[in-house]
Image 1 (cartoon, helix red, strand yellow):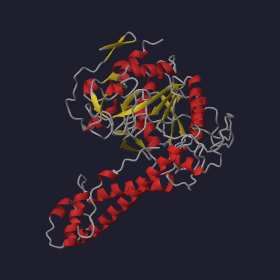
Image 2 (tube, one colour):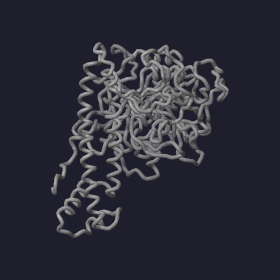
Image 3 (cartoon, one colour):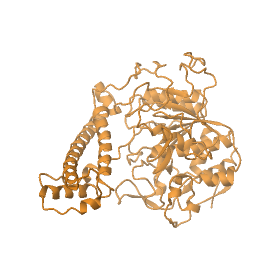
Image 4 (cartoon, one colour):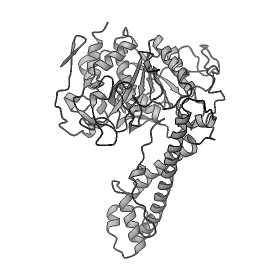
Amino acid sequence: MKALKLVFATALIGPFFVGCGSARVGGISLEKVPHPYYKTAPITEKQQNHWGHLDLLLDTIPGMSVDRAYKEVLKTEQGTTTLVAVIDSGMDIDHEDLNDVIWTNPNEIPNNGIDDDNNGYVDDIHGWNFLGNTYNEQLEYTRILAKGDTSHPQYAEAEAKYEEEFRKYSNLKDTYDKIMAQLVTADYYLSTNLKKSTYSKADIDSISTNNQSLLTAIEIVKYYTSGYDSLSDFKEAIKNDLVLINDHLDYHLNKDFQGRTTGDNPDDLSDVGYGDNNVNPHDPEETHGTHVAGIIAAERNNQIGINGVANNVKLIAIRSTPNGDEYDKDVALAIRYAVDNGAKIINGSFGKYFATHSEWVTDAIAYAAQHDVLLVISAGNEAYDLDKTASFPSDVVNGKEISDNFLVVGALNPTYGTKVVADYSNYGQQNVDVFAPGSEIYSTIPNNAYKSEDGTSMAAPAVAGVAALIRSQYPHLRAAQVKEIIMKSGLSLPTEVQVGEDPTHIKAFQKLSKSGKIVNAYNALLMASKMK
Protein backbone atom coordinates (compact mmCIF):
# COMPACT_ATOMS: atom_id res chain seq x y z
CA MET A 1 0.00 0.00 0.00
CA LYS A 2 1.50 3.32 -1.05
CA ALA A 3 1.37 6.37 1.20
CA LEU A 4 -0.83 9.23 0.03
CA LYS A 5 0.99 12.46 -0.80
CA LEU A 6 -1.69 15.14 -0.88
CA VAL A 7 -1.58 18.81 -1.84
CA PHE A 8 -2.44 19.68 1.77
CA ALA A 9 -1.89 18.03 5.10
CA THR A 10 -4.82 18.68 7.45
CA ALA A 11 -2.83 20.93 9.74
CA LEU A 12 -1.54 23.03 6.84
CA ILE A 13 -4.83 23.91 5.18
CA GLY A 14 -5.40 27.64 5.16
CA PRO A 15 -8.56 29.44 6.32
CA PHE A 16 -11.75 28.98 4.34
CA PHE A 17 -13.41 31.93 2.69
CA VAL A 18 -17.00 32.05 3.91
CA GLY A 19 -19.58 34.34 2.34
CA CYS A 20 -17.66 37.38 1.07
CA GLY A 21 -14.59 36.90 3.06
CA SER A 22 39.43 5.36 0.58
CA ALA A 23 38.25 2.76 2.95
CA ARG A 24 39.42 -0.87 2.70
CA VAL A 25 36.80 -3.63 2.83
CA GLY A 26 37.39 -7.26 1.97
CA GLY A 27 40.95 -6.53 0.83
CA ILE A 28 40.07 -3.92 -1.83
CA SER A 29 40.09 -0.13 -1.88
CA LEU A 30 36.63 1.43 -2.09
CA GLU A 31 35.61 4.98 -2.76
CA LYS A 32 34.85 6.92 0.40
CA VAL A 33 33.03 10.23 0.83
CA PRO A 34 35.45 12.83 2.22
CA HIS A 35 34.42 14.91 5.20
CA PRO A 36 33.24 17.57 4.85
CA TYR A 37 31.66 17.13 1.41
CA TYR A 38 29.21 19.50 -0.21
CA LYS A 39 27.29 19.60 -3.44
CA THR A 40 29.02 22.02 -5.79
CA ALA A 41 26.60 22.41 -8.69
CA PRO A 42 22.85 22.28 -9.26
CA ILE A 43 21.44 19.17 -10.89
CA THR A 44 20.94 19.73 -14.60
CA GLU A 45 17.91 18.78 -16.67
CA LYS A 46 19.98 16.13 -18.44
CA GLN A 47 21.09 14.63 -15.13
CA GLN A 48 17.60 14.72 -13.63
CA ASN A 49 16.20 11.78 -15.59
CA HIS A 50 18.95 9.38 -14.57
CA TRP A 51 20.39 10.88 -11.40
CA GLY A 52 20.21 7.54 -9.62
CA HIS A 53 22.94 6.24 -11.95
CA LEU A 54 25.35 9.11 -11.26
CA ASP A 55 28.29 9.31 -8.86
CA LEU A 56 28.44 11.37 -5.68
CA LEU A 57 32.14 12.10 -5.95
CA LEU A 58 32.26 12.74 -9.70
CA ASP A 59 28.86 14.41 -10.21
CA THR A 60 28.12 15.69 -6.68
CA ILE A 61 24.82 13.76 -6.92
CA PRO A 62 24.07 10.87 -4.48
CA GLY A 63 23.42 8.21 -7.11
CA MET A 64 24.66 4.62 -7.14
CA SER A 65 27.61 5.08 -9.54
CA VAL A 66 25.93 2.83 -12.12
CA ASP A 67 27.33 4.69 -15.14
CA ARG A 68 30.79 4.52 -13.64
CA ALA A 69 30.40 0.81 -12.91
CA TYR A 70 29.62 0.07 -16.54
CA LYS A 71 32.40 2.31 -17.84
CA GLU A 72 35.21 1.30 -15.49
CA VAL A 73 34.33 -2.17 -14.17
CA LEU A 74 31.94 -4.01 -16.48
CA LYS A 75 33.05 -2.42 -19.76
CA THR A 76 31.91 -4.99 -22.37
CA GLU A 77 31.16 -7.82 -19.93
CA GLN A 78 27.59 -9.14 -20.29
CA GLY A 79 27.52 -11.80 -17.60
CA THR A 80 24.91 -14.53 -17.38
CA THR A 81 21.19 -13.95 -17.74
CA THR A 82 19.61 -13.40 -14.31
CA LEU A 83 15.92 -13.78 -13.49
CA VAL A 84 14.37 -11.05 -11.37
CA ALA A 85 10.79 -11.38 -10.16
CA VAL A 86 8.77 -8.20 -9.74
CA ILE A 87 5.96 -8.75 -7.24
CA ASP A 88 3.80 -5.70 -7.74
CA SER A 89 0.61 -4.25 -9.27
CA GLY A 90 1.10 -5.57 -12.79
CA MET A 91 3.58 -4.84 -15.57
CA ASP A 92 3.10 -3.60 -19.12
CA ILE A 93 5.02 -6.44 -20.74
CA ASP A 94 4.52 -4.91 -24.20
CA HIS A 95 6.21 -1.62 -23.29
CA GLU A 96 8.80 -0.60 -25.89
CA ASP A 97 11.55 -0.45 -23.25
CA LEU A 98 10.58 -3.69 -21.47
CA ASN A 99 9.31 -6.13 -24.11
CA ASP A 100 12.78 -7.55 -24.77
CA VAL A 101 13.53 -8.21 -21.09
CA ILE A 102 10.37 -10.12 -20.16
CA TRP A 103 10.76 -13.72 -19.01
CA THR A 104 8.98 -16.44 -20.97
CA ASN A 105 8.25 -19.72 -19.24
CA PRO A 106 10.14 -22.35 -21.30
CA ASN A 107 7.98 -25.17 -19.96
CA GLU A 108 4.60 -23.74 -20.87
CA ILE A 109 2.90 -23.83 -24.28
CA PRO A 110 1.19 -20.48 -24.79
CA ASN A 111 -2.58 -20.24 -24.59
CA ASN A 112 -3.44 -23.93 -24.90
CA GLY A 113 -5.44 -23.92 -21.68
CA ILE A 114 -3.24 -26.65 -20.19
CA ASP A 115 -0.91 -26.52 -17.20
CA ASP A 116 1.99 -27.94 -19.21
CA ASP A 117 4.60 -27.64 -16.45
CA ASN A 118 2.21 -28.96 -13.78
CA ASN A 119 2.92 -26.10 -11.39
CA GLY A 120 -0.75 -25.34 -10.73
CA TYR A 121 -0.87 -22.24 -12.95
CA VAL A 122 -2.41 -22.62 -16.40
CA ASP A 123 -0.65 -20.79 -19.25
CA ASP A 124 1.65 -18.83 -16.95
CA ILE A 125 3.71 -17.62 -19.89
CA HIS A 126 5.29 -14.48 -18.39
CA GLY A 127 4.30 -14.84 -14.74
CA TRP A 128 1.07 -14.95 -12.76
CA ASN A 129 -1.72 -12.66 -11.63
CA PHE A 130 -2.86 -13.62 -8.12
CA LEU A 131 -5.50 -10.88 -8.11
CA GLY A 132 -7.55 -11.88 -11.14
CA ASN A 133 -9.75 -8.87 -11.93
CA THR A 134 -9.40 -7.39 -8.46
CA TYR A 135 -8.18 -3.80 -8.29
CA ASN A 136 -9.50 -1.98 -5.18
CA GLU A 137 -9.06 -3.53 -1.75
CA GLN A 138 -9.39 -2.79 1.96
CA LEU A 139 -6.47 -2.05 4.24
CA GLU A 140 -5.45 -4.89 6.50
CA TYR A 141 -6.62 -3.21 9.70
CA THR A 142 -10.02 -2.67 8.08
CA ARG A 143 -10.19 -6.39 7.28
CA ILE A 144 -9.30 -7.25 10.87
CA LEU A 145 -12.17 -5.14 12.17
CA ALA A 146 -14.59 -6.32 9.50
CA LYS A 147 -14.02 -9.92 10.61
CA GLY A 148 -14.79 -8.95 14.20
CA ASP A 149 -12.10 -11.28 15.54
CA THR A 150 -11.24 -9.57 18.82
CA SER A 151 -8.67 -12.29 19.53
CA HIS A 152 -6.44 -10.98 16.73
CA PRO A 153 -3.24 -9.75 18.45
CA GLN A 154 -3.48 -6.40 16.60
CA TYR A 155 -7.24 -5.89 17.06
CA ALA A 156 -7.06 -3.03 19.56
CA GLU A 157 -4.30 -1.36 17.57
CA ALA A 158 -6.33 -1.82 14.37
CA GLU A 159 -9.38 -0.26 15.99
CA ALA A 160 -7.43 2.79 17.14
CA LYS A 161 -5.76 3.17 13.74
CA TYR A 162 -9.05 2.83 11.90
CA GLU A 163 -10.73 5.51 13.99
CA GLU A 164 -7.80 7.86 13.50
CA GLU A 165 -7.64 7.34 9.74
CA PHE A 166 -11.40 7.43 9.17
CA ARG A 167 -11.64 10.73 11.02
CA LYS A 168 -8.63 12.11 9.13
CA TYR A 169 -9.89 11.23 5.65
CA SER A 170 -13.48 12.22 6.39
CA ASN A 171 -12.20 15.65 7.44
CA LEU A 172 -9.95 15.83 4.38
CA LYS A 173 -12.83 15.03 2.07
CA ASP A 174 -14.97 17.71 3.69
CA THR A 175 -12.10 20.19 3.39
CA TYR A 176 -11.35 19.39 -0.24
CA ASP A 177 -15.03 19.44 -1.20
CA LYS A 178 -15.34 22.93 0.29
CA ILE A 179 -12.22 24.10 -1.53
CA MET A 180 -13.54 22.76 -4.83
CA ALA A 181 -16.91 24.45 -4.27
CA GLN A 182 -15.19 27.77 -3.59
CA LEU A 183 -12.99 27.39 -6.67
CA VAL A 184 -15.99 26.63 -8.89
CA THR A 185 -17.72 29.80 -7.68
CA ALA A 186 -14.57 31.89 -8.02
CA ASP A 187 -13.95 30.47 -11.49
CA TYR A 188 -17.47 31.51 -12.53
CA TYR A 189 -16.95 35.15 -11.54
CA LEU A 190 -13.46 35.36 -13.07
CA SER A 191 -14.32 33.68 -16.36
CA THR A 192 -17.45 35.82 -16.70
CA ASN A 193 -15.50 39.01 -16.11
CA LEU A 194 -12.60 38.04 -18.38
CA LYS A 195 -14.94 36.53 -20.99
CA LYS A 196 -12.81 33.40 -21.33
CA SER A 197 -12.65 30.04 -19.57
CA THR A 198 -8.86 29.81 -19.44
CA TYR A 199 -6.89 32.66 -17.97
CA SER A 200 -3.50 33.42 -16.47
CA LYS A 201 -2.41 35.06 -13.24
CA ALA A 202 -1.59 38.14 -15.30
CA ASP A 203 -5.21 38.19 -16.50
CA ILE A 204 -6.41 38.10 -12.90
CA ASP A 205 -4.00 40.88 -11.92
CA SER A 206 -5.40 43.03 -14.73
CA ILE A 207 -8.92 43.06 -13.24
CA SER A 208 -9.99 46.37 -11.71
CA THR A 209 -13.27 46.19 -9.84
CA ASN A 210 -15.23 47.23 -6.77
CA ASN A 211 -17.52 44.20 -7.02
CA GLN A 212 -17.15 42.36 -3.71
CA SER A 213 -17.96 38.94 -5.17
CA LEU A 214 -15.28 39.39 -7.84
CA LEU A 215 -12.76 40.68 -5.29
CA THR A 216 -13.42 37.61 -3.14
CA ALA A 217 -12.97 35.37 -6.20
CA ILE A 218 -9.59 36.99 -6.91
CA GLU A 219 -8.53 36.56 -3.28
CA ILE A 220 -9.57 32.89 -3.23
CA VAL A 221 -7.74 32.01 -6.43
CA LYS A 222 -4.57 33.86 -5.47
CA TYR A 223 -4.55 32.22 -2.05
CA TYR A 224 -5.01 28.67 -3.22
CA THR A 225 -2.92 28.80 -6.41
CA SER A 226 0.24 30.15 -4.81
CA GLY A 227 2.97 27.91 -6.19
CA TYR A 228 0.92 26.81 -9.21
CA ASP A 229 1.05 28.17 -12.76
CA SER A 230 -2.70 28.44 -13.09
CA LEU A 231 -6.04 27.77 -11.47
CA SER A 232 -6.57 24.77 -13.76
CA ASP A 233 -3.30 23.20 -12.54
CA PHE A 234 -4.37 23.63 -8.92
CA LYS A 235 -7.85 22.25 -9.58
CA GLU A 236 -6.30 19.23 -11.28
CA ALA A 237 -4.10 18.60 -8.22
CA ILE A 238 -7.13 18.86 -5.93
CA LYS A 239 -9.12 16.47 -8.14
CA ASN A 240 -6.27 13.94 -8.06
CA ASP A 241 -6.12 14.18 -4.28
CA LEU A 242 -9.87 13.68 -4.05
CA VAL A 243 -9.49 10.43 -6.00
CA LEU A 244 -7.03 9.20 -3.36
CA ILE A 245 -9.23 10.40 -0.48
CA ASN A 246 -12.33 8.80 -1.98
CA ASP A 247 -10.42 5.55 -2.56
CA HIS A 248 -9.58 5.56 1.12
CA LEU A 249 -13.17 6.12 2.21
CA ASP A 250 -14.90 3.99 -0.44
CA TYR A 251 -12.54 1.02 -0.41
CA HIS A 252 -9.61 1.05 2.00
CA LEU A 253 -11.60 2.05 5.09
CA ASN A 254 -14.95 0.60 4.04
CA LYS A 255 -15.68 -2.37 6.32
CA ASP A 256 -18.47 -3.58 4.03
CA PHE A 257 -16.44 -3.49 0.81
CA GLN A 258 -15.61 -6.85 -0.78
CA GLY A 259 -12.86 -6.34 -3.34
CA ARG A 260 -11.56 -9.85 -3.91
CA THR A 261 -12.90 -11.45 -7.08
CA THR A 262 -10.72 -14.58 -7.31
CA GLY A 263 -13.16 -16.98 -5.63
CA ASP A 264 -10.58 -18.44 -3.24
CA ASN A 265 -10.47 -18.29 0.55
CA PRO A 266 -7.70 -15.82 1.49
CA ASP A 267 -7.49 -17.45 4.92
CA ASP A 268 -6.69 -20.88 3.45
CA LEU A 269 -3.17 -21.21 2.09
CA SER A 270 -3.96 -24.59 0.55
CA ASP A 271 -6.71 -23.08 -1.64
CA VAL A 272 -4.49 -22.46 -4.67
CA GLY A 273 -4.69 -22.18 -8.46
CA TYR A 274 -6.76 -19.00 -8.40
CA GLY A 275 -6.05 -15.92 -10.51
CA ASP A 276 -5.00 -15.87 -14.17
CA ASN A 277 -2.07 -15.28 -16.49
CA ASN A 278 -2.85 -11.62 -17.30
CA VAL A 279 0.10 -9.88 -15.66
CA ASN A 280 -0.61 -6.48 -17.19
CA PRO A 281 -1.96 -3.57 -15.10
CA HIS A 282 -5.74 -3.70 -14.60
CA ASP A 283 -6.40 0.04 -14.47
CA PRO A 284 -5.26 2.94 -16.69
CA GLU A 285 -3.76 4.69 -13.66
CA GLU A 286 -1.87 1.64 -12.42
CA THR A 287 1.71 2.69 -13.21
CA HIS A 288 3.52 1.31 -10.17
CA GLY A 289 4.67 -2.13 -11.32
CA THR A 290 5.72 -0.95 -14.77
CA HIS A 291 7.71 1.91 -13.21
CA VAL A 292 9.47 -0.49 -10.86
CA ALA A 293 10.29 -2.87 -13.72
CA GLY A 294 11.91 -0.12 -15.77
CA ILE A 295 14.16 0.94 -12.89
CA ILE A 296 15.53 -2.58 -12.65
CA ALA A 297 15.92 -3.57 -16.26
CA ALA A 298 14.62 -1.21 -18.95
CA GLU A 299 16.63 -2.21 -21.99
CA ARG A 300 19.99 -0.46 -21.97
CA ASN A 301 21.45 1.50 -24.86
CA ASN A 302 18.52 0.93 -27.24
CA GLN A 303 18.15 4.69 -27.81
CA ILE A 304 14.62 4.50 -26.35
CA GLY A 305 13.42 5.91 -23.05
CA ILE A 306 15.74 5.02 -20.18
CA ASN A 307 18.45 2.61 -19.15
CA GLY A 308 17.65 0.17 -16.38
CA VAL A 309 20.28 -0.52 -13.73
CA ALA A 310 20.91 -4.11 -14.82
CA ASN A 311 21.75 -5.60 -18.18
CA ASN A 312 21.19 -9.24 -19.14
CA VAL A 313 18.08 -9.60 -16.97
CA LYS A 314 14.73 -11.25 -17.58
CA LEU A 315 11.77 -10.06 -15.53
CA ILE A 316 9.13 -12.42 -14.12
CA ALA A 317 5.89 -10.44 -13.78
CA ILE A 318 3.79 -11.26 -10.70
CA ARG A 319 0.68 -9.27 -9.87
CA SER A 320 -0.36 -9.43 -6.21
CA THR A 321 -0.54 -5.79 -5.07
CA PRO A 322 -3.99 -4.15 -5.34
CA ASN A 323 -5.06 -0.58 -4.72
CA GLY A 324 -5.13 -1.27 -1.00
CA ASP A 325 -3.26 -3.77 1.16
CA GLU A 326 -2.04 -7.02 -0.32
CA TYR A 327 -3.17 -10.31 1.21
CA ASP A 328 -0.53 -12.34 3.06
CA LYS A 329 -1.60 -15.40 1.13
CA ASP A 330 -0.95 -13.75 -2.24
CA VAL A 331 2.47 -12.50 -1.12
CA ALA A 332 3.50 -15.90 0.24
CA LEU A 333 2.43 -17.72 -2.92
CA ALA A 334 3.99 -15.04 -5.14
CA ILE A 335 7.37 -15.47 -3.43
CA ARG A 336 7.17 -19.24 -3.81
CA TYR A 337 6.12 -18.91 -7.45
CA ALA A 338 9.14 -16.69 -8.15
CA VAL A 339 11.51 -19.09 -6.41
CA ASP A 340 10.11 -22.16 -8.15
CA ASN A 341 10.51 -20.52 -11.55
CA GLY A 342 14.17 -19.70 -11.10
CA ALA A 343 14.25 -16.10 -9.87
CA LYS A 344 17.54 -15.22 -8.21
CA ILE A 345 16.24 -11.86 -6.99
CA ILE A 346 12.73 -10.78 -5.95
CA ASN A 347 11.74 -7.14 -5.77
CA GLY A 348 8.89 -6.31 -3.40
CA SER A 349 7.89 -2.64 -3.51
CA PHE A 350 4.94 -3.03 -1.17
CA GLY A 351 4.23 -3.30 2.52
CA LYS A 352 1.81 -2.70 5.39
CA TYR A 353 1.77 -2.35 9.18
CA PHE A 354 -0.84 -4.96 10.06
CA ALA A 355 -0.93 -8.64 9.11
CA THR A 356 -3.21 -11.61 9.66
CA HIS A 357 -1.05 -14.44 8.35
CA SER A 358 2.46 -13.05 8.57
CA GLU A 359 3.80 -16.54 9.30
CA TRP A 360 2.90 -17.60 5.76
CA VAL A 361 5.12 -14.83 4.40
CA THR A 362 8.02 -15.49 6.77
CA ASP A 363 7.85 -19.16 5.78
CA ALA A 364 8.05 -18.08 2.13
CA ILE A 365 11.04 -15.85 2.93
CA ALA A 366 12.75 -18.83 4.56
CA TYR A 367 11.86 -20.91 1.49
CA ALA A 368 13.54 -18.31 -0.70
CA ALA A 369 16.61 -18.41 1.54
CA GLN A 370 16.79 -22.19 1.22
CA HIS A 371 16.81 -21.77 -2.55
CA ASP A 372 19.39 -18.98 -2.57
CA VAL A 373 17.06 -16.15 -3.59
CA LEU A 374 17.58 -12.55 -2.47
CA LEU A 375 14.51 -10.45 -1.56
CA VAL A 376 14.80 -6.67 -1.90
CA ILE A 377 11.96 -4.87 -0.10
CA SER A 378 10.95 -1.19 0.13
CA ALA A 379 11.08 0.29 3.64
CA GLY A 380 7.81 2.24 3.38
CA ASN A 381 6.76 5.85 2.96
CA GLU A 382 5.43 7.08 6.29
CA ALA A 383 8.70 8.39 7.85
CA TYR A 384 8.38 5.73 10.56
CA ASP A 385 11.24 4.36 12.64
CA LEU A 386 10.84 0.66 11.84
CA ASP A 387 12.75 -0.23 14.99
CA LYS A 388 9.67 1.05 16.82
CA THR A 389 6.89 0.24 14.32
CA ALA A 390 6.27 -3.26 13.02
CA SER A 391 5.98 -3.61 9.24
CA PHE A 392 5.24 -6.47 6.88
CA PRO A 393 6.74 -8.32 5.08
CA SER A 394 9.52 -8.88 7.56
CA ASP A 395 12.15 -11.51 8.26
CA VAL A 396 12.08 -10.73 11.98
CA VAL A 397 10.19 -13.12 14.25
CA ASN A 398 10.16 -12.53 18.02
CA GLY A 399 12.96 -9.99 17.64
CA LYS A 400 15.27 -12.27 15.65
CA GLU A 401 16.06 -12.42 11.94
CA ILE A 402 15.05 -15.76 10.46
CA SER A 403 17.06 -15.42 7.24
CA ASP A 404 20.06 -13.76 5.62
CA ASN A 405 18.44 -13.01 2.26
CA PHE A 406 16.16 -10.08 3.10
CA LEU A 407 17.29 -6.53 2.24
CA VAL A 408 15.22 -3.47 3.22
CA VAL A 409 15.77 -0.17 1.38
CA GLY A 410 15.09 3.46 2.32
CA ALA A 411 14.89 6.37 -0.15
CA LEU A 412 17.19 9.26 -1.04
CA ASN A 413 16.61 12.64 -2.69
CA PRO A 414 18.78 13.75 -5.63
CA THR A 415 20.58 16.52 -3.70
CA TYR A 416 23.34 15.73 -1.23
CA GLY A 417 23.13 17.60 2.06
CA THR A 418 20.91 17.74 5.11
CA LYS A 419 17.85 16.79 3.02
CA VAL A 420 19.41 13.86 1.18
CA VAL A 421 17.00 11.46 2.90
CA ALA A 422 13.48 11.63 1.45
CA ASP A 423 11.15 13.16 4.04
CA TYR A 424 8.68 10.28 3.56
CA SER A 425 11.18 7.43 3.89
CA ASN A 426 10.99 4.97 6.75
CA TYR A 427 14.26 4.26 8.52
CA GLY A 428 15.66 2.14 11.35
CA GLN A 429 19.13 1.19 12.51
CA GLN A 430 18.08 -2.43 12.95
CA ASN A 431 15.29 -2.94 10.41
CA VAL A 432 16.37 -0.88 7.37
CA ASP A 433 19.55 -2.07 5.69
CA VAL A 434 20.57 0.58 3.14
CA PHE A 435 19.43 3.71 1.33
CA ALA A 436 19.21 4.28 -2.43
CA PRO A 437 17.78 6.81 -4.92
CA GLY A 438 13.99 6.99 -4.55
CA SER A 439 12.73 10.50 -5.29
CA GLU A 440 12.09 11.99 -8.74
CA ILE A 441 12.94 8.70 -10.43
CA TYR A 442 12.17 8.68 -14.15
CA SER A 443 11.05 5.33 -15.48
CA THR A 444 8.61 3.41 -17.65
CA ILE A 445 4.83 3.54 -17.26
CA PRO A 446 2.19 1.78 -19.40
CA ASN A 447 1.55 2.54 -23.07
CA ASN A 448 5.16 3.32 -24.01
CA ALA A 449 5.24 6.32 -21.71
CA TYR A 450 7.65 7.55 -19.01
CA LYS A 451 7.21 9.47 -15.78
CA SER A 452 9.00 10.52 -12.59
CA GLU A 453 7.69 9.01 -9.35
CA ASP A 454 8.76 9.06 -5.70
CA GLY A 455 8.95 6.43 -2.99
CA THR A 456 10.93 3.70 -1.34
CA SER A 457 9.09 1.69 -4.00
CA MET A 458 11.55 3.27 -6.45
CA ALA A 459 14.59 2.78 -4.20
CA ALA A 460 14.12 -0.98 -3.79
CA PRO A 461 14.25 -1.80 -7.54
CA ALA A 462 17.37 0.34 -7.92
CA VAL A 463 19.04 -1.97 -5.40
CA ALA A 464 17.48 -5.06 -6.98
CA GLY A 465 19.16 -3.92 -10.20
CA VAL A 466 22.54 -3.71 -8.48
CA ALA A 467 21.97 -7.17 -7.00
CA ALA A 468 21.15 -8.47 -10.48
CA LEU A 469 24.40 -7.02 -11.83
CA ILE A 470 26.36 -8.79 -9.12
CA ARG A 471 24.62 -12.14 -9.59
CA SER A 472 24.96 -11.86 -13.36
CA GLN A 473 28.70 -11.18 -13.25
CA TYR A 474 29.50 -13.44 -10.31
CA PRO A 475 26.90 -16.24 -10.34
CA HIS A 476 28.87 -18.30 -7.82
CA LEU A 477 28.01 -15.79 -5.08
CA ARG A 478 25.11 -16.71 -2.84
CA ALA A 479 22.20 -14.45 -1.94
CA ALA A 480 23.59 -13.81 1.55
CA GLN A 481 26.92 -12.77 0.05
CA VAL A 482 25.23 -10.40 -2.37
CA LYS A 483 23.36 -8.79 0.53
CA GLU A 484 26.61 -8.49 2.48
CA ILE A 485 28.39 -6.91 -0.49
CA ILE A 486 25.65 -4.34 -1.06
CA MET A 487 25.63 -3.35 2.60
CA LYS A 488 29.39 -3.24 3.14
CA SER A 489 30.40 -1.60 -0.13
CA GLY A 490 28.11 1.41 0.05
CA LEU A 491 29.15 4.98 0.75
CA SER A 492 29.02 6.18 4.36
CA LEU A 493 27.74 9.74 4.45
CA PRO A 494 29.47 11.74 7.20
CA THR A 495 26.58 14.09 7.75
CA GLU A 496 23.52 14.76 9.84
CA VAL A 497 20.24 14.78 7.97
CA GLN A 498 16.62 15.78 8.40
CA VAL A 499 14.33 12.83 9.05
CA GLY A 500 10.67 13.26 8.14
CA GLU A 501 9.04 16.64 7.51
CA ASP A 502 10.08 18.22 10.81
CA PRO A 503 13.21 20.35 10.14
CA THR A 504 14.24 20.00 13.80
CA HIS A 505 14.28 16.19 13.59
CA ILE A 506 17.97 15.70 12.82
CA LYS A 507 19.88 12.44 12.99
CA ALA A 508 23.27 11.18 11.90
CA PHE A 509 22.78 9.47 8.54
CA GLN A 510 24.78 6.49 9.77
CA LYS A 511 22.13 5.87 12.45
CA LEU A 512 19.25 5.48 9.97
CA SER A 513 20.08 1.99 8.72
CA LYS A 514 22.01 -1.09 9.69
CA SER A 515 24.79 -0.37 7.20
CA GLY A 516 24.68 3.40 7.55
CA LYS A 517 25.37 3.60 3.82
CA ILE A 518 23.97 4.42 0.40
CA VAL A 519 24.23 1.71 -2.24
CA ASN A 520 27.10 2.00 -4.71
CA ALA A 521 27.24 -0.28 -7.76
CA TYR A 522 30.86 0.58 -8.57
CA ASN A 523 32.09 -0.40 -5.10
CA ALA A 524 29.80 -3.43 -4.98
CA LEU A 525 31.20 -4.91 -8.19
CA LEU A 526 34.76 -4.30 -7.05
CA MET A 527 34.06 -6.11 -3.80
CA ALA A 528 32.21 -8.93 -5.56
CA SER A 529 35.21 -9.53 -7.80
CA LYS A 530 37.23 -10.48 -4.70
CA MET A 531 34.61 -12.69 -3.06
CA LYS A 532 34.82 -16.47 -3.26
